[in-house]
Length: 301
Image 1: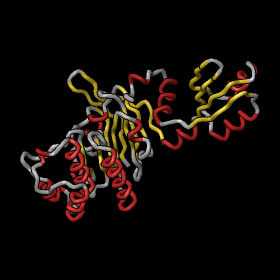
Image 2 (image 1 turned 90 degrees about the horizontal axis):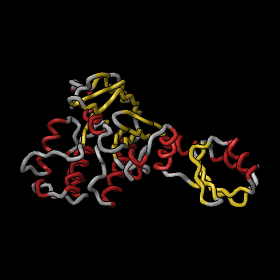
Image 3 (image 1 turned 90 degrees about the vertical axis):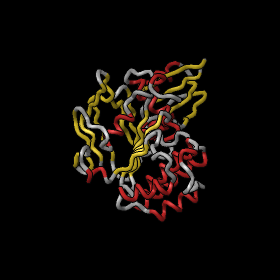
Image 4 (image 1 turned 120 degrees about the vertical axis):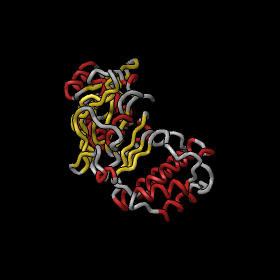
């Protein structure tokens, strides 16, 4: 488990991360979302020991990460803009990482290069942005590290490569217990792969929740009530997070399980009623509006 305990980091007078605490469980995909400047990249760099926190501590298996080669050996970090040695080729980068990570699987690395149709002897400087991101992911997977930190994981990848990357993560999670930590500006990219999501804003964590728990506990319903009394009865029985009206049609987001909401609606007289599934983005919009944040400034759709 990764424990982030009251961590802060500033650059000059600018606070990038402020008293942030999170827990990241093993064998789960943890997604971090937020706008530019939310602190995602700074946090990842502290998590892999590149930056030292000004305050607080980041631990893996109870050991501090910073200046700790044993802890760092469990981590492979893929930055948003991966770095490769000048004039290097994929095979040369593979050989370098093989010298750094004792469990690096060269056979699998070459196999993945072939599957992704990346020429092992071509200069990486001639690769597109997407090809460079593919190579970085292949290197990370082949390192056989316990934790894979990916900054803007799917940026630059086409839809086919995005799905291939997700499949690689799923395979290694099942076979060797990989724990991916992913960041993105876009919740839609993370919804179908993450088990747990944290929302960062202005250096702090607004939310950190299990996706299934969120989806089970928040519902959306469209309803036209038979009369005002029925609307009043409904609102008394539900914890209403968001209420919007379009003519006579009421659209509610409520904090109830699906079964609880069905039971309530069974006792309400309506002309029309429909319960709708919520996307992860809609769930975060609901949660953040409750605590007073304008979601349009927090998440880029």
